[in-house]
Image (cartoon, rainbow, N blue to C red; front, top):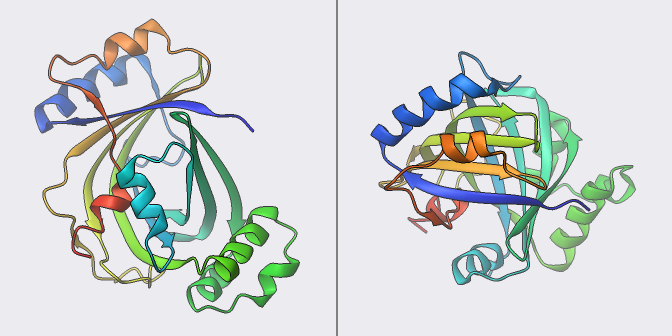
Length: 223
């Protein structure tokens, strides 16, 4: 299992304008991007005692969370993802789902998952049964992605974060979403073994400090 370095920074709108120009000069865009950006919609899972949320807030060193995600409101490509954190490093595992499979998970129709040929689907099934893991809330935001091949670097600017509160009808394009409080713009920098100096210099801001930020946590602001 490969773990990647990951840094997050809360930035201002002015910072984003500066970073956008710098990154466009040295990076490639992402294949999912339309006019340099794309819309992400995710459905996050948690236990009745909010284990995933509490572990994030408490800064637990080894933790994981499950989500289902698709892009630009296109339900023809849907991913089940498990994100793990270990000693400050991150890993993401992914498996494809059909829209029908995703809806069955939302509806609690789970028996088919036992016989899936995708280990991640089987793992989610096990934890939905043993830990009572269940869909919790929908999270929306806009992402501007930048890719730099050396070091497998991915830099993203995320903003307009919205929450579905307790809504899990995330396949519905008309699912009601509201701003997640006064959420900031988030700069994320991810890389494998080394961070090239050209990217380190490009993302350097005097007012920028590394910190922890969770879109899922901020989207639980109202409960």
